[in-house]
Length: 394
Image 1 (cartoon, one colour):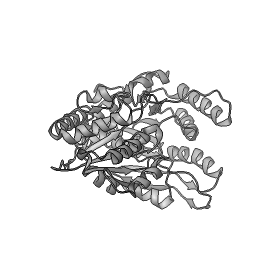
Image 2 (image 1 turned 120 degrees about the vertical axis):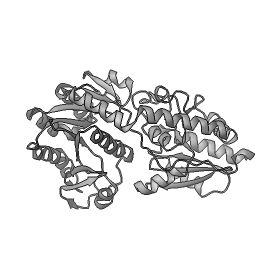
Image 3 (image 1 turned 45 degrees about the vertical axis):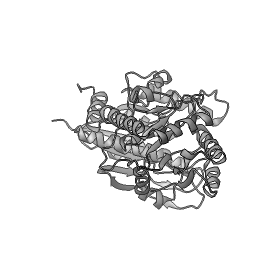
């Protein structure tokens, strides 16, 4: 039987490396999606390898970290070298992953290289994969606002897009269906991520409710809507809001405003955890009943990205309260609560419904969990990915 390998080129990282290298600009959601995709591929008999830039914003300290090899959730990960020096940091991150890909050339088997988004840092690695005649696939996670090459950064974006469009002969994985219009690559298939079967699920207490907002906490993700709703509720002081708790994790331009609210008395209570470890975050998820995904429909990327956190929240048994963007409704159908009135009053109305209709809210959460576990089952997702990447029957 032919060995099949998938090499994922990305910037995913585990907590240990993040702390060791002093990185605070990573994306935990992206890392989680990559590692869970690799685990799904393993369940389908594929041998995954992650080549990660292992980098964040350099701090000018001059600290240097060499190549690191370790396993994360059973998946072999090759972390490229990283240097906390301006310019040299970027140059190293362009060359180092290509060197790591070169080292894998002697591994036997049929190989496919998956590139997580169109990143300039991957250009040398993409060219090497082409020279080595490896199958090349783009994992397109986010839509891009068209650039006119007015700056050097814009020009790099145009060149990078052209390069990926020309050299990715294996097509593209899409975070949502609308992204099909953002690439000429074919064939394409949607991949929403995989659901994690949890032994512990969100428990709904008889009194009180905990609502979680995590990830990037900014205006673009609807944080201002949450801030306004909290302020109004504390002014109006409705009886149903007593016992309502808002938990916030992650980072972003709205986190300081929420920290100020956390220091003030009144309901809803606000707790800002900030950037947490994976273990801490899982505990927070397990103790919340409602998960928020509030990216506005009017945003420039509302229909060209998928809020992957909804899969995670629903698989933990949480009621997903979300704006009606992207492919969310196609995935959840009636297994989520949709914020059609994207205003502070609209969010308050849905929070009130969740507090006052606990049985119905729990039924909706259960339905959402079932939908996600059916559509994003790791074994089925792994088989579908293997079929797409290697052009074999599912």
